[in-house]
Length: 517
Image (tube, rainbow, N blue to C red; front, side, top):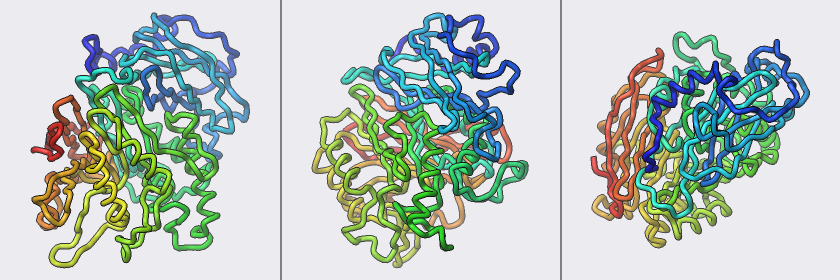
């Protein structure tokens, strides 16, 4: 967002590091609260801080008290009593201008997580925040509110990321991301992996078994959240987060488990598993109370607006979808979105909307033939499995005249840029939207730019113009005139510290949805 007083990310990171030891001296007085954490207790802010879902006057702040994040009982090393947690929001990194403060209750039934929905802040502004539990002070986070409704926005920077299997590699990409200057991180799913993994050298010490209960999922989230590079990226920007399959179970769809063994594939048993996974997910994310799960149900689809420039439509392609069926992909009854979410999306895309409209979602949207030659091989866990609804959404973008649609996607562990044609069988037909698929943060371990068979894949799918199988994220810079996507990659995740660089760049001009290299 345009802001002449913007503090650089480098300045912020340096200031935040200094504040961790001097916040009590520099800060404004705290709200008085009972010291519910013993002064001699171990550090409780081991999972860092985060913010999310920014609106013009506020944002969600998050932390969780957990002196032992991987304690087997899932309580994070905390007792069974509630704890008072103070919080502050300031307009400066030294906390001399505190503009909001209060006290929250970290409850044992919510794994001592804290969700604060702050309001009354200035729009399009940087704010710093922190927590206190007893004498302990959290790390400092920086966040940024959205512009006022309808306000002119000249620049918006966003990263898209997904798929961070921690045993597969280090979160080197987040170390690079934290040095960017971003308004938002859109995380598109697979924050954790429920399954066991062979891992990579040097990572075998990580807990590495299948998880299926609320306690299990809490421990797994605690394990992932201890990573310092992930914590740095959360502390640097607000995030907008949705989930995908591995946040519960590989390839699940609605009430259908993909586990072959009884009783796991019983719908009632799977709903209980999903309820535990959803609860732990909410406890560890900067999500609003409206996203708090009700048993096995959790509303994740929502819309964030950034002035006159950008609407971000966050979708849920797991909870309401039809079970995968590669034999009948064009059955018109099949759905990826479900009736309620589909109606919500159709209405939102029909306007009035911002200048750019982003569909932030999980699985590959563009048609993709995975088999060379005359035979057609489809990915049953993509929108190809619900082709009629996918085509209806594409046609709705055309009929509604949706302004500058861009689709951002995760899941497949490889960067792609794709042209979504009005008629997929005719590459000369108009382009309706560009799809930007981000690779994984770490899932799959060290990658390389291309694999054997990629030349044939690209020949079979000429609408795919970028393909890179290294780890990383997509950095998008949006202006009123164009959308620039930089496909950031790191060559190795088996060791920390590999530098990030831009593997490819595409630009989508406004009012012309075809990306240019």
